[in-house]
Length: 413
Image 1 (cartoon, rainbow, N blue to C red):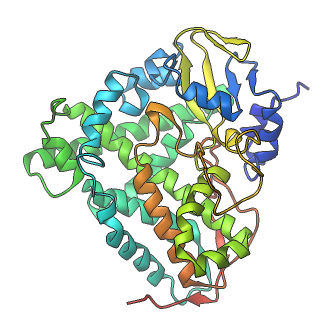
Image 2: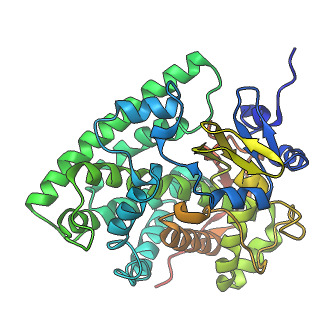
Image 3: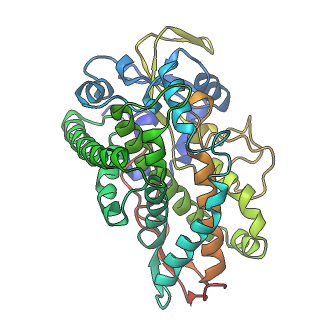
């Protein structure tokens, strides 16, 4: 029997609960060629370098013909989302969307949402009063960011239910292909999910173009900035991206965060008495238990010489963000969860031109969520550890996180 590579083991579901020992082994040889010809890069220095290297493309059209990425790009009716493009198209579309999302044009948008976020969180916790066992995912971590991004974009509340299935299929398509049968099935699921999501967004955008409201989607549909107006196709691709990316990673970050706190009760108690600690604590969570474990969407557009090796043009490259985040050459005591870690230059949101577009909102959501959970849950403790994890290796987090509680304190007025 052929021995599996470390990367293959990372993608094996049996290692989902704790891939970190595998990452430690990976860093001993931080750049490795896989049997299929792809390269896996795992040290902080090399991952960071490649995240800023313009020769490493995110454009699905640059992947080899026949690859899943190329097929998904070729079969789409709508343009590729800007996250899967390179400059200059990426930069232009990102600027156009940023005008409605954050600094400098909408500098106060995220901060102005604090009270609304708090109200949503408190309402979710009010619903579980009287319960003695809860699922952090289903009862809290999933509905919270879904509600937030749908409100922000202007998606009707009754339609939020549709996004769970679409998101699951699209997220699973990010994982490396394990076998042709599984790959074909996953590809079909992803294509169907993307088609349904795009059809839904097309109808919603058409309605907003005819009758704009006070929401981000309406502003995107009617804005005439320096780069012009987004086309209907780009609007569909961008809004679908924001809906999926706007909640999937945040669900995992909240859940991974609560799991980490329950495994470190002294830190949980400290946060309960010092809510301001949450700012640094969330940064440490992004390093210690990042929702995005590795980047699977990069391909070399030229030969890249790095660390004495050549990554050939046309080769897929996997950047192991979670391995880099525990690199002892960058972080002291990297295997320790240090809630007030200083100078924490983690890669939890990536780096370079594709740095997470929604990072400011995600940070605020998770800060709000963890503080509320810690303040209002009475004596929370894990039902089972490790919990049941979701299938994906790229976006890693518990599918369920069952917690015993002695109750929920009343909301502070």
